[in-house]
Length: 424
Ligand SMILES: NC(=O)c1ccc[n+]([C@@H]2O[C@H](COP(=O)([O-])OP(=O)(O)OC[C@H]3O[C@@H](n4cnc5c(N)ncnc54)[C@H](OP(=O)(O)O)[C@@H]3O)[C@@H](O)[C@H]2O)c1
Image (tube, rainbow, N blue to C red):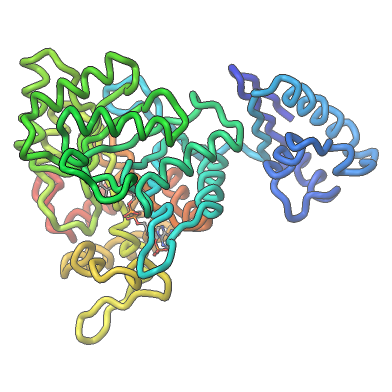
């Protein structure tokens, strides 16, 4: 058994043999993290296990000792794992912040579609627990996620507090731009990238997340009505006040991104270090110029909808008339926008290439599609996975340990009609 202390985190990793014996003792259905939660709720391991057999007594004694110290030294966080998480980490582009190679997106938290809440609070917290267990430390949200807006940020904040996780162990990203309906019908200054709206929104975001700073603050879209100089000055103030560590930009034309970077440079302001375009193997929109700017300027790319909303998992079928047939309950069955937004003739060809590579490497199409993004070699690329269940998340995390050959990577590029640089 290995016990690792670092700052406020203590991780106990058990050998397979020890965890098998412990499982045989009691833990048939519960994970070790459930036991830890139980212990922090005041149920001791002795009470829980009853009298251990001689075989496991020593092991249990050490664990009980560690747990008692952990509980006594609250708010110390303790992770009990049977094996180290399979996650790998990277610096986020040219920033000094280290993130998991997958980010977790929380767009569907509290979102109502067709009268159904796609992910309720309990499911949201289960998903965040699964992220934690898989070593995902990078969480993406926005002020406007959830119905009413703000629910996603609030549920993340409540999860952090409820689980006693340390703020320093997660990298939180949020966004500003769209009209925020938290106070009812949005007023004339309740959207866009003007100083008044940004300054109001950052306060709400920090309050809901229960933190005094964001690691990353994106502009969700470009605002044609506000001079970019005002936006960059306001965002720079937030960085200098310590409310935000890094700035990011989501969807916009490449020339607008370039103009924002140029404005920062000539005015001595903070620049965008991270971008968030819609970028996936099936995406036929022209993001080549945008990605060229990111590569040239050493900007990290965190693609949203990396699985084309689930299309690249291979679970959608094509009817004889060409229509997309969605499985029951999947996103494609809840929104009419699915077909237009995520599919095209090229997308079906890409899916075929992805499925053939998946067969060769004994992986799933979702894992191959995510790996194709992670293997982009001109910039750091950290896909924002939007899994709806812990099982989906577990499957997607499998992309981290997958390897694609150059030939496999290029066959996917070829199916999407990429040019020499690899982009459409
Ligand atoms: N900046 C922006 O404008 C913007 C826009 C959109 C999203 N985002 C961010 O990007 C994140 C991800 O976007 P996204 O949700 O569109 O990502 P996505 O990964 O392309 O799609 C996620 C959906 O695919 C399905 N899925 C995922 N993994 C699966 C698996 N292994 N097996 C079967 N189905 C699976 C699930 O839907 P079903 O189970 O319902 O099929 C899931 O909700 C969002 O949460 C948000 O943080 C940003």
